[in-house]
Length: 71
Image (cartoon, rainbow, N blue to C red; front, side, top):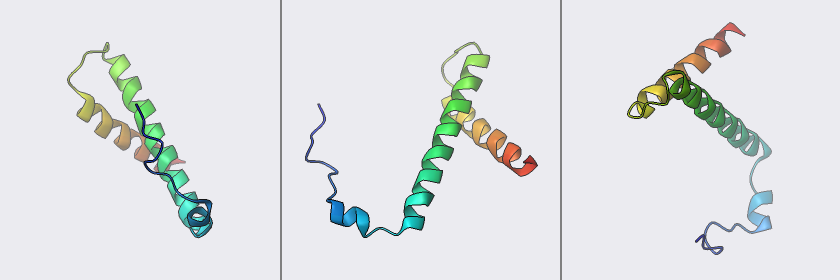
């Protein structure tokens, strides 16, 4: 069960955060989800065989870096 008292930030602390930092966090979260999605695609392509999660993750990062350089 999730404790609702953990990681609660007041609205005043949110407004004190620079807008650029918030945008950077959003970009990082998006990049992380893209890596996660690509890693899962690699897992599926291998027939959903367990034991290579770390390799899939690194390959996903490599694939996404390569595709961003081409764009």
